[in-house]
Image 1: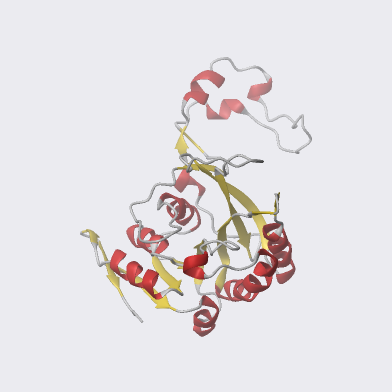
Image 2: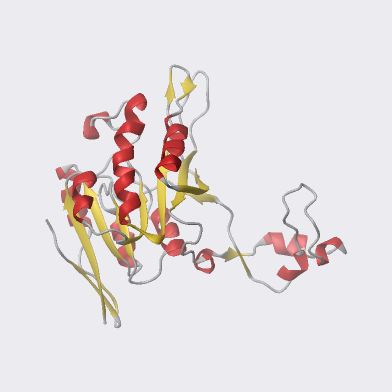
Length: 284
């Protein structure tokens, strides 16, 4: 009977992670306070100061992440004086200088984003999920997030040309060819890097809760059972809740006492089946 530990800490991740050994976590998935957002709760960070605030924390993330691990950063730039601020782009460049590999960028398409009206733009219906790694070789379990082949197979595979039956050279110069006939008998396909997820959440106790399906997708993709997941900006504990459900160990760090309290209330010992039992440990 496996026991899954969920550890929650109250405080600044910059300080708390300094007590952790290097190479401790298989996955870091988090959504830090965006620049100048949640002013009434987190106080907000000026966009011009955001990179300087984040980089010491990124240094700790780099240290505690395993060489085979992945860091997923959910973040979105804001508009300042009528144009998009560049702090996210600047952050990516500084993280590369720090030693991170910017491996991929996933887009979270928020299917039911809140309606609104602005004089010079439309509503935001997407957010970035940036993937960083320490090394080019990292753990990735692609089969765990495969999706049904769907209508594409029924339409595309009905009439195959000779080109579709060979791995020809890409006509757009990407270097990658295709062999569509390989998918004739397959019922599942690999997803794209666009995640179509609703913003709905059952937790209204936090001002910026992302849906459980978001960390769930990345936890499935980059970890296996008994691996360890870190959310250094844990909020109400969504990532830890999902990790517990998926039988992963997890650590959540939250600086606001009221949200830390909510996280503790949200994560309770639960027996999922006869072979696995979860427990809460090391509460601070």
